[in-house]
Length: 292
Ligand code: SAM
Image (cartoon, rainbow, N blue to C red; front, side, top):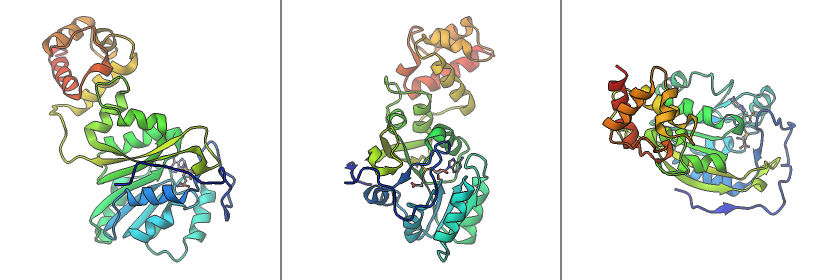
């Protein structure tokens, strides 16, 4: 895995030469211009010639060309038609790259992955992307919740969001997404990236995380959907005690919440952020019983 270092370039967020598209703020376009960070992302994704890479938001192709040098095949999904056109010219002749014009939240990744693995006899699937920050959480949740057939996800995101994902469930820094990410994957940091690593420079610092999809869930559950509903309810008003926040769960009144907390051995005054993944699993089972 990549070294944990902060990369710097000398010229502050210089406009890259050969850039043709005026960056769209609305589409979260902050293009990577730091070669060290690009190297760390590719290196930290364990890509080989047997890998199928799904790239989210290739932009002007800073990562795409490097990914294509190593991977068996790269499928890059880009929403901005101007960039799709530019990429088709830039990547002309690179036969192992396909650009799909579409929304990463809408495309049928399952079919894309299944068809490409079969057609090109590839062995593993690596999702990679310098994410559009306005939809970081929906993208990560889509990938994880739909059970994407990938081995790992390496993603650049806002540092603040990265801190949430890296937090240990049951600590102050954790949020609902912390439990989801740790339930589906093992998270590690690849590299930090200051705002000077991008053009235009964003107002925030960034971090690249790698999520290795687990083969086995870390806790046993009868109903995964209910587990995440309970977690979301717990965090809807994170300052409230669990007894109060659980009543936001559909069909759960205060008596049911109290009975479930008691049966799971969890103090009613505790807050969601203090619960371990195992405690949330036990609380979910107890709530299923109490709400019958
Ligand atoms: N990978 C490039 C780089 O590192 O220089 C660009 C990264 S930029 C932060 C995010 C990219 O995602 C942009 O190219 C943007 O147009 C694209 N994008 C934004 N929303 C998208 C969506 N819903 N689906 C696919 N791509 C999207």
